[in-house]
Image (cartoon, helix red, strand yellow):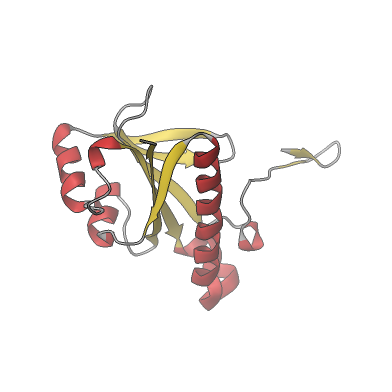
Length: 160
């Protein structure tokens, strides 16, 4: 927060957003994080906190592994978290119309850069993934795929 006089405190974030509309919400699946249950969470940037959406059963983890095969160099069993960038169509399209999606992709890239920098500073391994089962993953996360869409994915784990 930044004080802007006696009557008002402005809230700022560490990533830019066209028009300050912030149409991207970070969802993440926690697998191997000390102090966190395995589950799906959202990040709440204004308070620097997280909110549990739902805990994951062993069966749900198996389902996630079935729909999330990221390649030969990435083992889901060693992941810490998978961060999904979920775009809410109506958050910025009311202002930017046809340009809204372009700004959302730019914003997702800027957030991804911040996550990569933070992961590096904490000696964690992070990689951005372009190939994933979008529809199945949206269903798994509880994202409707109509007004909200997954735009990007970053995986974070420990360095070996």
